[in-house]
Structures are given as structure tokens and as C-alpha cells.
Image (tube, rainbow, N blue to C red):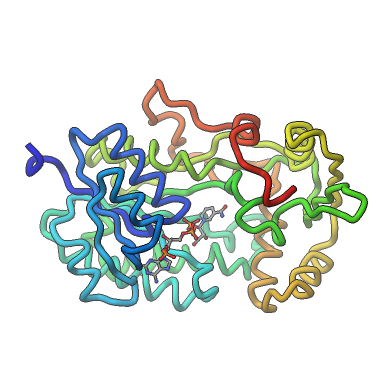
Length: 324
Ligand SMILES: NC(=O)c1ccc[n+]([C@@H]2O[C@H](COP(=O)([O-])OP(=O)(O)OC[C@H]3O[C@@H](n4cnc5c(N)ncnc54)[C@H](OP(=O)(O)O)[C@@H]3O)[C@@H](O)[C@H]2O)c1
């Protein structure tokens, strides 16, 4: 009976993480979960597509506490992903996440709160990266929930998603290979091309969230990470170049200062350019900082029949026309 199904409310439901969560739960676990997708505009094509899959729609902006109260009403579980890049400030992302946390903390039926997050870069690599604002923001959010909403924190599973495969298409000017006049592609990043990057397809978020939810309280107060593999960008580029109709592609390591200058020249404001510079510098590492000891590997908890999307498969399945 529909009323006995647990209600999972997905925030950021039209996004790279929330969308696959809605889709996976409806396709694979609709006998136990019903899904409410929270969107800012229920008339958008993406929102309509979620409704077509069977999601209930609720319209709310994270800034609007009353709308959030209606959207989260009766939730047994909440998947929360806030978007730093919506306003490009820690203040706005933190404000929004704590708004969600406040509303979630007042729901009597709530059993699980899954918080999409990232490691605190300030504590990594000898404290070299203090101004990766995109990661710092997530650390403030975790601290804000832990201190401000301790009962909610007890039901929280922190969820780290590694550097998306999709970043080349999502943010081509920041992370992608750029086509030159002679047709060659150059990928310029501020890290050695032969150091591995932890990465994942954002499409796999749904399978991990499903596994966390099905485990009940097992992952409360734990961190689960989604990493499909670790691969240097030189190798990523070579696989892509071959699959992308045999184009020629070259990796070029640039200094962090050059990288930042390039972003600013492309119109990125200075603070965001600095944050992206630190982020892009730190992602290529010998050690896997996304899933260090103590962090649960998503691949260990996901349904055995589910295969995480590796880069090779992703490259074959993706539509690259906008980049080519
Ligand atoms: N790129 C990566 O490799 C990576 C890896 C791990 C974590 N992250 C983190 O992921 C976050 C972005 O998530 P994403 O990749 O899913 O982004 P996305 O694809 O751009 O989606 C963002 C989602 O958030 C919604 N949203 C934004 N502001 C909102 C607001 N004020 N109220 C309600 N909904 C709002 C958007 O709704 P609309 O449809 O209305 O715009 C959309 O559904 C960032 O904070 C980033 O740090 C990224």
C-alpha cells in the first residue's frame, strides 16, 4: 500500500546528484519508497520529467523556510545537496543548508538525513589549501548541523561524491579540454597529469543513496563516499581522445597562478577563481583523500548487481557534441 512506503524527499532534484537519486529510487525501489522531488520551478522540463517518472513534485527555494516546511512535510528521509555555484559564496550555501537542517530537525517522522558534502580541505596536505571555498563551505555546513541541530546530526549520513566525470561538459572552461584552432584539444590543469584523481559519475549517486536508505540506521553518523576509480588526467584524456572520434589531445600542466589567471581572463570573479584553483590543484593525489580510512566506500555497500560507471564506459555513453 502506498501509504506504507517510506517518503524520501530529494532536494536539488533537477541537479546532477538529486536527479539520479530520484530516478534510481523510482526505478529500483518504488515498492518501498515514494519520492518527493523538490524543485524551484515545477514547470521546467526537468521537473516535468521527474513527475513523469512517478515523483511527487514540491516547489521550494532553500531560502524559503515556509516552502521548505511544506516540501519536507512527513519525510522519513531527506537527501540534501546544496549548490555552492548557485551564488558562489559560502554564506549563501551555508544559510540554505542550515535552513534545510532546521526544517528537517522539526520533522517527527524523519529517520535519515543524507547530506551531500566534501572533505575539509583545510585539514589536508599540511594545511596548504585554506581557500578552497567550495569545500570549506561544506565543512561549515557539517559543523553548523552538528552544533546547531545535534538530534538531526545523529541521523545524518555524510555523503562524499568524488570529482564528477561530467565536469568536462558541465564546466568546460574550468575543467575541460579546449579545442584549438588546429583542431587539437588541450587540457590545462594545475596538477601533474600522471597523479591519480578520485572520480565518479554523478549518475551513480542514486544507487549509493538507495543502499544507505535501505540500511536504516546503519550509516547514521558515518561518511560514505562515491568513487568509481582513480585515474590520472593524462590517461583520462587519452581514453577520451580515442573514443571521441580519434581527436588529438594534449595534457598541459600549468602553474596554479597561470590557471587562476586563465579563469579570471574568462570572466570568473577572483575569489571563485582562487577557490577553483585550489580545488583543481588538490584533486590529483597519490592518496585518496575522498575515501581515507574510516570513510565507507560506496562500492562496498551498493547492491552487488550494480556496477559503478567507470571513465571508459562513461566516455562511450556520453554525448560529447557540445565539446567537439
Ligand atoms: N562537480 C563535482 O565534481 C562535485 C563533486 C562533489 C560535490 N559537488 C557539489 O555539488 C553541488 C552542486 O550540485 P550538483 O552538481 O547537483 O549541481 P547542479 O546539477 O547544478 O544542480 C543544482 C541543484 O540545486 C538546485 N538549487 C540550487 N539552488 C537552489 C535553491 N536556492 N533552492 C532550491 N534548489 C536549489 C537546482 O535547482 P534548479 O533546477 O532550480 O536550478 C538543482 O536542482 C556543489 O555544491 C558542489 O560543490 C560537486
